[in-house]
Length: 65
Image (cartoon, rainbow, N blue to C red; front, side, top):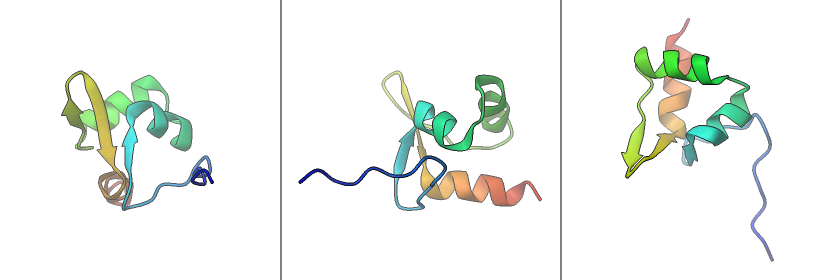
């Protein structure tokens, strides 16, 4: 049985997301995600691929207000 896929818009603190998954789940465009990275969103790199920990994305959004 295949593992269930997460819903669009759902961010789990215990998950790791690619930058593309972040764009799809949040609706952020390339420029908005680039701005978020410049403003403190932590992106982990493995080779040329970027990943964001769910807890880091949640903390970033909570820091905006």
